[in-house]
Image (cartoon, rainbow, N blue to C red; front, side, top):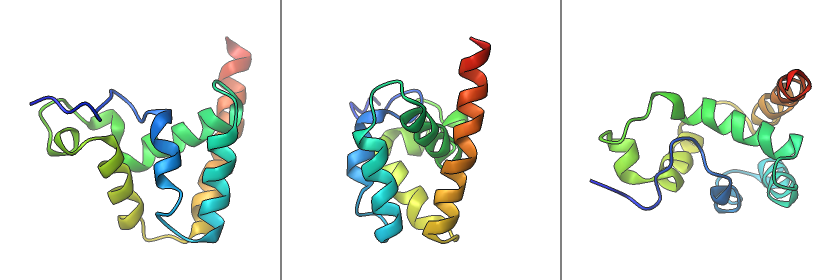
Length: 106
């Protein structure tokens, strides 16, 4: 089964759809990532965080998650996350140096 909302990894087009998934602190980080330029450290760090949070690396075309689509999967991952919005922001902030380090190697 093919879902037009399913990609190999978390797609940047889904970022704005996550804005209201959690509280005020989360909304700020989503707004920041959505406004960032394509390929910027902020956007890539947000994508990396969501790939890890949603388990995109272990998703396959015939999995239930893939059939749901990336938007639904990401929203569900955020609902299931038991940490606070501040902890999500910390995960985002941790991803920034990782992205910078990788881009410096390239």
